[in-house]
Length: 371
Ligand code: ZN
Picture 1 (cartoon, rainbow, N blue to C red):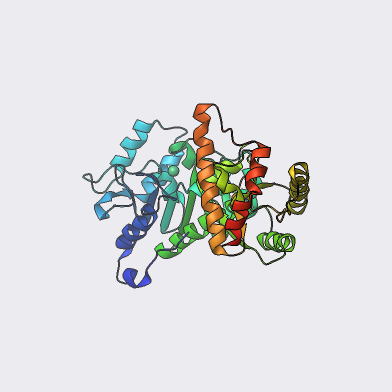
Picture 2 (picture 1 turned 90 degrees about the horizontal axis):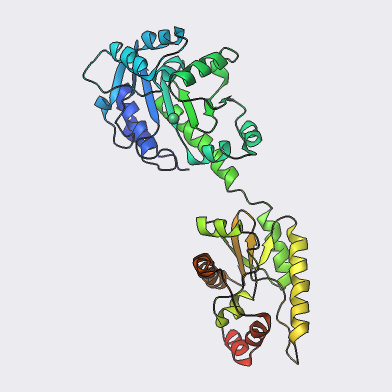
């Protein structure tokens, strides 16, 4: 995730202007917040300026921040419970400018964090992990210096929970708070550092999510060995490629139109556990297919031209980038057709012997040689 902070632009801004500036940076990124989500604050003297409800971080201005007495917010933690309407009433009473918007529902939580700037987002990558069945271990591994808070209802209950948990930590030891199934808080005494912490934390989760299941250089070396030349690879982890890779048998659909076979072979290889074994098995399956149908043809290289990588995306192999792009285009169009064919009973492609005839048709072979 790109850090958009421009020190040159920020150098003459006062505390509240800096708050507006980095709030807008957060709001400009839909991978952090969507449509009015998230909230930010700055503490200036005994006042907490916190995002007002109805304002969007992407477009917020100074007057979008509600000024609330900091101590009065903290004192609200003495209540065992507060209804939403009671909380709104007490918060409004604590405001120094009654014409300002209502403070965010997370105002009390912002107040108890002992740092000047506090940023809160619902970053996709973080909530992807915290909404995954086996995501908690990964969260704990990646965010050692974060307070991890089990899900509770946002608002007063969440503020009480964080306050309770914070008694067993030292605030100076932690860089932020991960709210399971909700989002993330970062904080610091400078606007830049709090924003930087957010971008770093979210980038960490993004890299984790997009990490391939095995070493791609080793895959390239192994494929090069099998093809007899240094192969190029195109990696496609787009949403549709990834969605395709989660299907039950994504490598058994077949081709979209006969001429594609000289580019893609009939099937891709499915890589999910041990890519060397899986490629070897593909090759022996290809050799059996050739032997079942051959008369006097010469076998093409039996290694796959593209791979579906389980829960990750697709990878195409070729002698150069141009060939990889061609195979990728064909694969992606085929994938779209496979999904669309669901509406009509499911994809049903050419059978094996028709495929063989096409793959080893003299005219098609000649076409390849000409390229
Ligand atoms: Zn939230």
